[in-house]
Image (cartoon, rainbow, N blue to C red; front, side, top):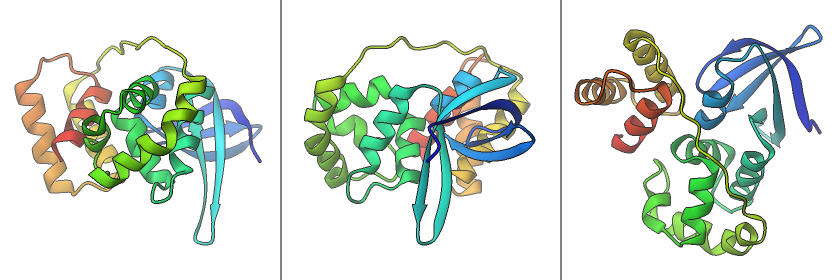
Length: 197
């Protein structure tokens, strides 16, 4: 229904944004990968997928068409819903997902919270041929870090939104911040906390 939205970022959060398009605010759920690509922008264009089920209607947005394509491949699999698809793309970037599928790396896919061995194997089995036909390579983007208190707060909010228990998330974030370099990025902190949860 909606191919993309282009407008001003009225609100941004690691798990969703509100895009003002001609005076109408669209709430769009995003992955951590997309957040890292758009967080410093004022005006954005997100490629969207409008998901409709009997109990939910939601817009999902992606920084580039490739990420949207990987998301659509993931949610086409029985047992993988849009929340799980976003969780995968928040833990791994699209190239890492494709690489794990092509190399049949069950362990990497299973490292995503909420994905067990059977689901990981199903993802690989059902998507290997599709991904193999249209896989493209891409470069990783280095994101500069901001202040630790802000990062801690934003990471905690994102983890709770993704379904992690607040106390467990706080404990994980504090341990990672204590053990890591001072310049850890928000995205890296959330990824590490998701793996530890």
